[in-house]
Length: 202
Image: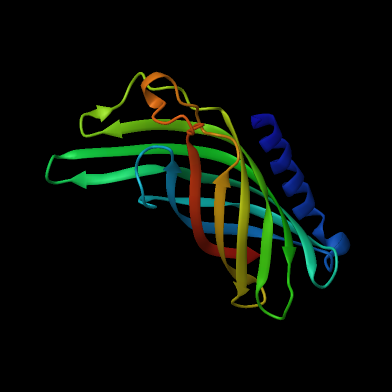
C-alpha cells in the first residue's frame, strides 16, 4: 500500500510538471484542510478529535460540468473523549494515514461543485492514550483502509476553492476481539471524518 501511495505521488508530480502540455484540461495544486473525526464502534460519540489533512491534487476536466480528481494527502483521524472532571477519565485514539482519494466531480451550475469517490489509505502511525498514558495490549489496527467520500466546494476566486467533505471507512480500522465485541452486530471500528479547508490551484 505504501508503494501505491508513492506511485500516486510520483504520478501527481509528473502530471504537475507536464500541465503546460494541455493546461485547459488539467489543473493541479495543493490543499490544506482541518478535520474533526470520530470512530464508530468505540462507544464514544461526537466529532471531538481535531486534526488536519494536507496534500496535492490533479484535476482533469472531462467536460464543462464533469471532472476527475486524483489526490495524495497526509490525514489525521481517530477519536477522543475529553477529560471528564468528575472522574478524571480521558481517552484519545490517533490514526495517521497516507491517503489517495479518487473523485468524480460534477458542477451543475456556475458556483457549487459536488464530488463523490473513494480513498485508499496506508496507516503511518497509531496510538491510544488514556489518563494513565499510552494504552498497551489492545487489538491491532489494520495497515490499510478503504473509505467513501462525499463533498462539495465553492470558488473563492479563480484559483481558490473552499471545500467541505465527509469521509467514512468501508473497511474497519480494526475488528473486535474478545472483550471488544460488545454487540453481535458490531463488525469493527470505522473512521468518520468531517473536513473543511482550501484548495489552491497553481
